[in-house]
Image 1 (cartoon, rainbow, N blue to C red):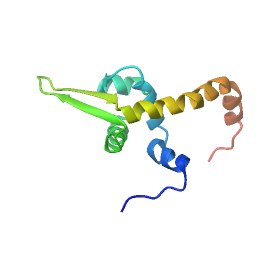
Image 2 (cartoon, rainbow, N blue to C red; image 1 turned 90 degrees about the vertical axis):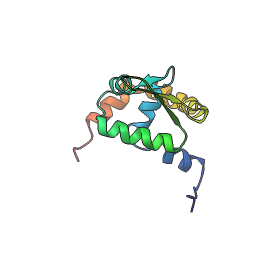
Image 3 (cartoon, rainbow, N blue to C red; image 1 turned 45 degrees about the horizontal axis):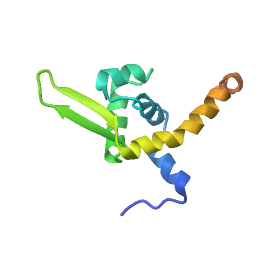
Image 4 (cartoon, rainbow, N blue to C red; image 1 turned 135 degrees about the horizontal axis):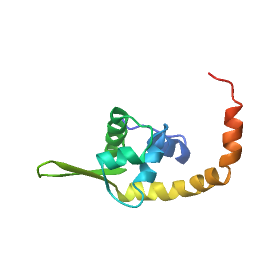
Length: 114
């Protein structure tokens, strides 16, 4: 049975939820990247987590994975049209974060440790 969403924001957050997916989207916003290039572009992500996130995004038709049959094998990742439209929707959120990064960093430092 297909999942039912309460609203559009619920649907969008289901697709990009978590720490890494939006960063992967951003890394792919201008060009296709090989796995190693993508891992270097998304600072701090483990190989296992990147593989998991890419698989989830591929299953949701956000990311396209293309395998080139050559030696050594070459795999590149790119955004699908749906992924590009999602990235465009995230641009204002990124701009808001950039405009407020200093305030956000200073207030995050005051949060009690969990």
